[in-house]
Length: 116
Image: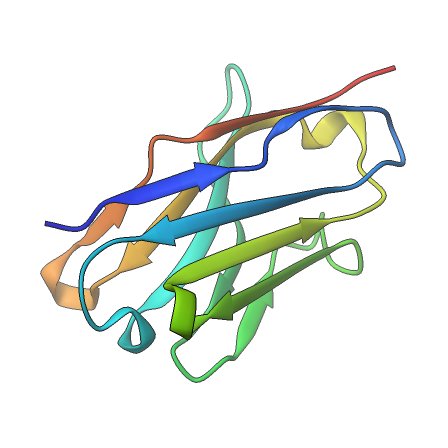
């Protein structure tokens, strides 16, 4: 059983920065793609950023140039550096570990609120 624990969320002013972390239990962290998703009130959950086992990265158009996903396989952790935050970035952010055809695992989420 894999557990994913997100941290780093909070309240930040527009233009500010936050770094989210997602620590994974279990073995073979390095072989799985990892992703960050978010869900705002009344909206569907959406992909924010994804990083493959080889380090390739994809971003939602809305966060390109502002957010950076990275991973530290030695620490079983994936990060999301969020800069130039906007009110529309307010959401619960979730970490996902992609096991392909075998399914996936999700964290419990961390709240990010961007407000003055």
